[in-house]
Image (cartoon, rainbow, N blue to C red; front, side, top):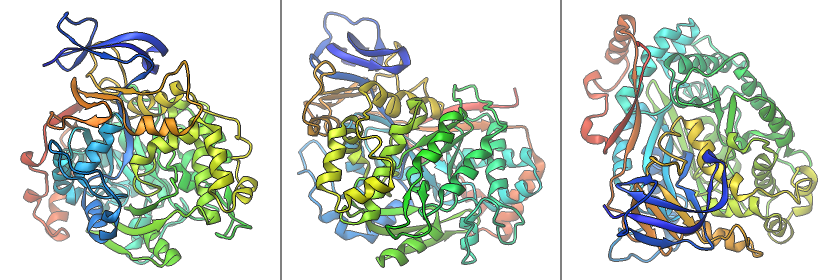
Length: 573
């Protein structure tokens, strides 16, 4: 394998407290090393920023709902994609890009690891087949668990050891990474045409509430000592006045402490928080308002919480979520096409196109709220930048979000020149109070690298440039000593990295993908728990009575999982 030395770059690595320090990065045998031979290829990074490869904690890039979005929206492919080059696969898609474009675009932005945020366990094979076909980036997938009949029954009786044994079995059967909670109880209620809007609403036929489900998942997660915390999409997403439900959900972490050996501090990660910080009682401009400050005041003082933003990018996109009732609600708001599915004893999902039109007040307010979350965050190691791809916008718009956070000028330009109701947005949100606030490149690295890896429990693998780490290194055409006066340079630089190394292989060179035929990993958690005969009987019984597949055909076969990398967690020791 070729040796490299990246010379003269300004290195930013929060894991080592390095902030724009001129230093060399040496790469050998896929690792970052202290030195290389005189035969090493030199990459001159003078006047450029060097960071670890990016880490995306929450994205929808593989699986049945993503494919449904592609099939459902042929018009999404009409947007111009890069011309096919002889050494690359064809690229297509705007809000739901093809697997090839997904891998290439993440690599162009300098990302090394992406987490698929919602895997239906019954459809896990499909998810892993798409992961296999997505080039360059390492990936994981989180099985959705908050509406699973097994867990609802165990939580009702507070059988945490049984819940842990079942969750462990699911992680192993699906090659999953973490426990995902989507609209707890509400998605199951949707099977009966109902929903759970608050954390105290009863789940039909299960005699349990969302609060009990979330607490049960926290306790189960800590019992299993998993690398990542429970990953929560709370009830009442997208509705005016939902910030009270959000605060009630966040407060469920009180009294819990992490029991993981993987370095995380949180017991809950709340995802796409922008969609959960709305005040008011309707979507009328006289009512709808931001409550980001109220929510972030609680997040800032609660150290066992992390969040990601879910920034609106003001694009046409395709919403998709395991929050089935939300998608039904959305299609009645915008009157666009809708598809819906129920996944047996496990979950449900929906897909609806959506346009975040800057000519509407609501889209402008949503845009502001997402940015406010990042700007209000006092600890950037606990607040991460996402777009809930593709729900608030496509992931490849991350550089645009970075631009808005790095440059107050860029934000003000949107308010003054793009938003039709810019003045109203300033009046009903906190974006005006933050008109001079900007994050630094160091803070950006925390929000896209070091902090994310720590929260996921994979800081031993990603998010750092320490000696011995996998050589996932991104170089951007930004000089920290001479920051651009034109904010567009931020977006341009972060959209197409100057160079990107994935496991020591040069994937991007001079802003172009030059190699995608490199090893990639499927990272999953091999959870080992004490033998539990009761849960084994429960599983056999439910599969005989309720599932459409045999138990023997449920688990993912080894051939479905591309280059698996198992993180072993054994609580029997």
